[in-house]
Image 1: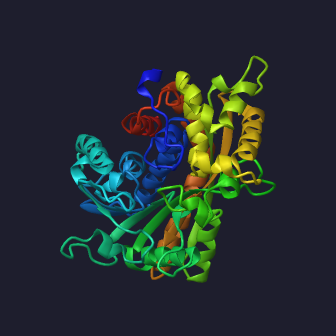
Image 2: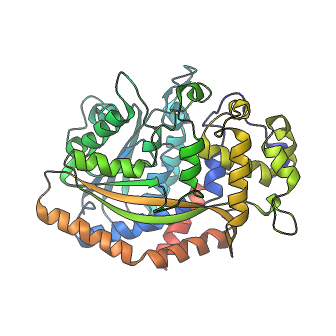
Length: 426
């Protein structure tokens, strides 16, 4: 990739669609690892006679984003059936089609990211002998009306899904229509557990989490302490404020409050950074740190694409605009963020290079009306997955770097999905 292919991101407004997600995804094995974890989970579910049925399995993707995660990672391996039906909902018009909530511009479904990823996935599903029935819809994932959100002429009925994916969704739950973030989170979880899932259905959530103790170094630490969590900050972003601290813990508490069973497994991964950040002694280059603290100099980074993508990965964590952060002279401002996060990246490395630790939680949520034997089977699945985590960690990192996943910034969803399948096969 050459500098001529890159243009500077909007400094005045954090626009989620400006490639931040692709920069993040190209720098972390998180998708490869969780895809492998989910693939192994799928196999364990099959052994227990859950979710994946011979004739058809129905999957709900809540807050789907561009639908690459569910179609190209989580459903890429681990099961066989004649047909998989996927219904997805997200508010982002570019992702799933519809009208942009801020600009009012319209994106047709055929030009959406979801449709593009569906086309890729359809080829892969066909090669596996599986029919893929897919549709995405624009809607509010937190309004407690998921069935209506994905229905066309009432073709989706309550309690009709075998599995629901809640992947990196609950960072974005924000106050709306007189309801607090906590109330909307409760609504969403209750909706999934009691209205979306069949009695024997399972919801699977993945969210980056705070470390178990003394965490002042991880991805979620920086998101919680520097992220877009005030209404004034949200005005400089086209995505909802990062209002919910440590969402995985909030999910656990909400489930307890609402009588919903939630089982949790810790999954740790990394966000990698390029060697361009460092001088010959392994220290952050002084000039690089100065540029990262000064949006007026970001244009200089276009000459060094790897550094530019390092910068975008950091902004993906906080999801605030560069100008707004620069104007913030408090402890949550740009200067303090860059000082602290670059120091942590400098001091955190292994054989694969410098990185930021990403603590994550995988959570399995069941319908409160499920028979007790279903919960026993789900617990057995989680135990089986947990027993393989060491092997999965090693395999994910190896595959990620062997295939050069950390190099280049093109959307690598198709390649990543193949990495997942090949790793599981081995």
